[in-house]
Each structure stands twice: as structure tokens, then as C-alpha cells.
Length: 183
Image (cartoon, rainbow, N blue to C red):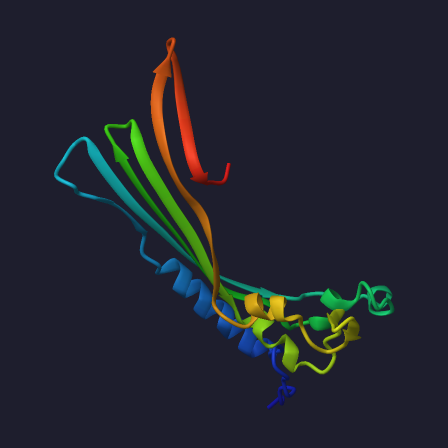
């Protein structure tokens, strides 16, 4: 029987990787749809709540580039992930809520949240070489506190939070939004 090599955090033997990919695929294929319209009992008022749940698994399939590893300013991304290691192990949730009155007035709120375990373990690697400044000095081997905030815990952001009104000006349909929104 062939013995598998010992893995350090973020690296998995090929057999374990295949099992994770298969389990992830089964999870994705079995995910129910998370969108529905809320029955208000009033035909002039519509409410809709959509949720998207996603899981991504990415594995580095190529060796590190020696040219990048030789540069202290461009090596971080290449050095942190060796061949066969996870580069993303991410769980995402996108939630969107819309409310509309008489197709003229409404509001929208949407937010995203995520957690990526592949980045949460970077500080445990001895060969992590993030170019981080601490009190004006370069610190090797750790991520900045800002990066840790996104990488080592559940993170999220508000995407949309706005109200709108639709009306007609001289036979021209017009829409006005007020608030935070993406285009």
C-alpha cells in the first residue's frame, strides 16, 4: 500500500482532495433554490427575498514560479500556495430583498457574506511572506490586521440599500434612486 505524504495546513494529499471535490459537488447539486415572493395579499404590493448560497473549492495545479519567488515584492501570492494546496475554500451567501408599491415606489437591500478557510490558515505557514508594515517596519510572515479581518473570520458587506420612485416626464419613463446602489 502506498503511503500518502504528510500534509501541512492548506495542503492535502490527492486522495483527500478528490474526496473533498466529490463532497462539494454533491452539496452544490443538492442545494435548494432560495428565492421566493412573499404573498402580501395586496396586488399593489410585492415583496421578494432571494438568497444565493455558493461554495467554491480551488486547488493550485501548477508549481510555484521561481522568477516570482525571487522577488520580495511580487512573491506573496505565489509563495503562499504550493502545487496541490487549496487556494480557495470559500462559502458565500448573497441575500437580496425588494419591496415595490404599485410598480412606482420601492426599496432594495442586498448584502453578501463569506468565509474562506484557505486564507484563514495563511499565518500558520512559516513561508508566508506578506509585505506588512508594523510601526513603519516591514514584518515578514504575517498578514496585516486589515487582511486578517477579511481572511480569518466570517466577513461581509452591504451591497445595495436604496429607495426608488418611477414616474413619467413628458412621455419619458423616469427612475430616481436614492441611497447606496451598484450599477
